[in-house]
Image (cartoon, rainbow, N blue to C red):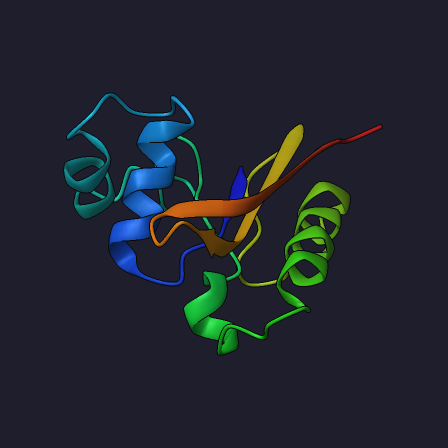
Length: 113
């Protein structure tokens, strides 16, 4: 399961392809097909609802992602629980350099003990 920085829908699709979960052009159709939903056929993306569901709380975004992964890995994510998660990935981005490049990418991987 992965909690992605998804300030826009297009950004989520771009991140999924950039991280190698999908080949270029395949993240959109997979998402529309429900493959990235809880219980879908692919990697579960943003079971928390992502940034849009939280109102994109600047500064708190990364903490929210980690908290969601912990709930998922402990099996305490009531109503949005991913079945038997083993690994959780949080990817957060922020800032812009030179008008087009991401200034920061933070990646955390958590594993169920």
